[in-house]
Image (cartoon, rainbow over all chains, first blue to last red; front, side):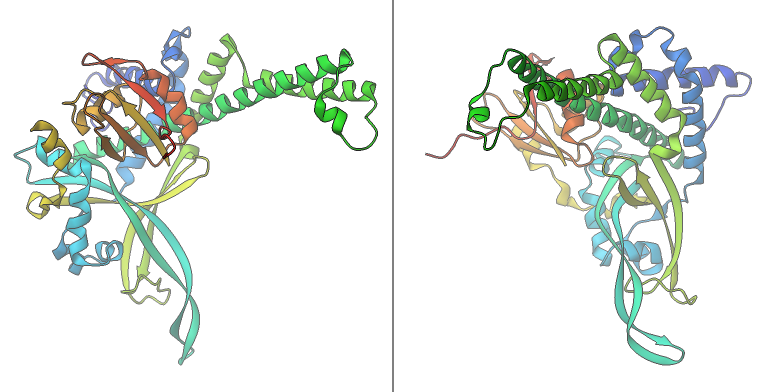
Length: 339
Length: 87
């Protein structure tokens, strides 16, 4: 049973049992990604349960609120303004989606499938440009307008049916929460390493000053040498600050408890980790935003992922037919190795 | 963008199998893979993780470094291996 296999359909008669299974699987996955040692903590699942229940409800609401998948094909490019806004030419639709490893793998593994559901993620930018426009009945050449640009298109997740696909999106969002936690912990690992080096340097310098030893750099320094008593006091203050910072990050057995606290904190506030908002705009054929009711309406999701630095991506859910799959995605490397 | 170098791969392992193997150890799916066959004795690959930092990859790397997979002991490092200076 996959983690979110029962995310959207709770079986009648035993909903609590189903929820319990999901929480246990979600706790297992959290340890797998963040730190496998977390499972060694006493009452790991029970302590994580409230945060996991919040996260699971949040994912359910987010995934259910995503728009319906739209057809991605050359024909849809002519009729669907959203698809037209995302791709410069009709031919690009099949070319981009066919190149995606996930799509190729899906059609390889599901010989009977005639179409695939996929999430298409893109870099997204809103630029201010100067363009001609009618202002109070007068044509002006330099009116500031907002233009949308989409690039770096990647297929993130696929599914055979819409339900299976939405479950996969739920799984993807959950994985992102866990990766954000792991990312935060990785930042702390680095801080801990830097502080260890700083602490060793400060201690060595303090020992030298206390033993009235000097270094070549001290001997060659310009000007009068600093008062050794003041220098020792300054080093001791720096060392104390470093020790406090180190203490704050936690070490030894405490470090694992601190990691667990960060995981609970992230899962208790899932909206802060990944924010998904639906955007509806009217644009013309050049992707310039229209505020006067002209143009065509497009809709897409905007994902804000709280990494360092934060990332913003646009996404649409698509349906892509096997008949549109280009042969360009052949894996010559794999064929060569097989031979 | 994070890059990871994985060497001494089982020669018959496909891209999908490498991805599935790494996902078992908590890695997300890689974005692209570049095979580096070398002389064939220790095939390697460079994996691209555009959304992961080197710090995060360094945290995950010990889980698969020195791990045996299909009778091959993997060598995994974050970033690209240093190349010898041209003579």
